[in-house]
Amino acid sequence: MNFIVSAVTDIGTTKQTNQDSYKVQVLNTNQGKMVFAVLCDGMGGLAKGEVASASLVNAFCKWAREKLPALCEQGITDSVMEADWRNIVTTYNEKIKLYGKRWGVSMGTTVTAMLVTEQRYYIVNVGDTRAYEIFDGVKVLTRDQTVVAREVELGNLTPQEAEQDPRRSVLLQCVGASDAVYPDMFFGETKWNTVYMLCSDGFRHEITDQEMYQHLNPNVMVEGDGMRQNMESLVGLNKQRMERDNITVITIRTF
Image 1: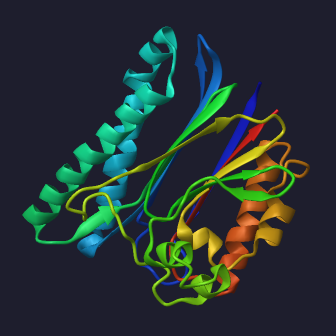
Image 2: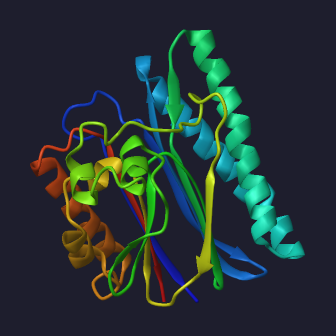
């Protein structure tokens, strides 16, 4: 299996800084090619959301650089991935919290990290950044940790009502701003000729699943430059529709 990756980030129409941070890279290992991707959407005063998101991205990149090669030798398992990634999240929840207290600001970040191997994918998620699988449709692989997502689960809101609810960006958990953080883990079988996508919430509020599929389905995401152009088109569409947040999207094409 091979991979093509691409990423686009944009400050958006109203914010002074881009508090999204990300990294995506194709890795050559003794277990074959893999893709590691991580996306964090930071929040906080005095531009400290940018610090929160970047610090967590760097922590996950350090894991990929220092720990993943040994895991490839031993064999990657769901339980080891869950333990490692939960440990990063809980450790940085405390580190970011202490840093914020020192500066006198409230700060934090969401996170979605994904490792895609030739056989299996592994995802950790806190907050409302998301991972998707785009094949014959658009499938969300993660679960938002938000007030409106909980209300939908409880039957108090429909998905359509949730999209318009003024609380749609209110998080139940945030790395660095929660007393304790409980990340969700997701696992699945990697599909051929499929697009996996990570995005911040600013990317998805103003576009439909149909528009997402039209621009990002595997039949049109066939090479790096074209992938980037398709992603930039959707970023532009979000901005035309007055999306106020930072916008970041990462795509991983398997073939």
